[in-house]
Image (cartoon, rainbow, N blue to C red):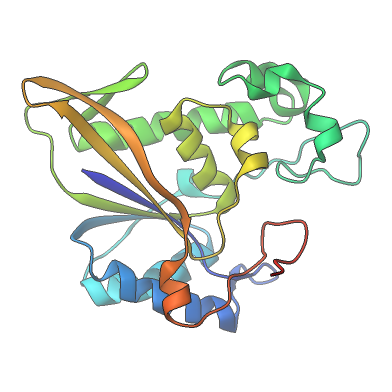
Length: 238
């Protein structure tokens, strides 16, 4: 089984929709996803994610299940040294590297800037919902691996969401710190992350989530669409 985790196209945050570029990205994304044997689509209830998903839904003849737990991480955080940068992705290296707990898959949740702002609690809910979803398809989380149920489905499921939320899901699957991944990876708009639920032995019903790609934009390159810098602190330059 594979999960495809997709960031929405280039956004117009003022209307929670897509820019003209974002609509082009969504169309190119649908070209790519139409080649996948996707049987189910789950989508954030935010406009920019829904507009990104629609061309793919039209191509595949599917209807999405819209869910609030795929919405973007909503909470600002507070760094005493940088009060002007309150967002979960915008804290500078001199801030987050001061805390060794931030690299730990569990201890980061105890840091006041994440705990008090509600980020840790929000993501615990997201991860619980995602684990319900994997169990629906026959993969039950058991610590750092997944037990495969006898009726597990060999299928492809697409999730249309957001940079912060999608990256957090990858951290959950990889058993690594969420803020560490927030600060060391970037998923461009309309990019794709692919996760394989890999079974190692035919006689052992156990799988590990293997990340095949993060931030893949090959479909945008194929369509001569420039890669957006949305989510970086500076423009992408040669």
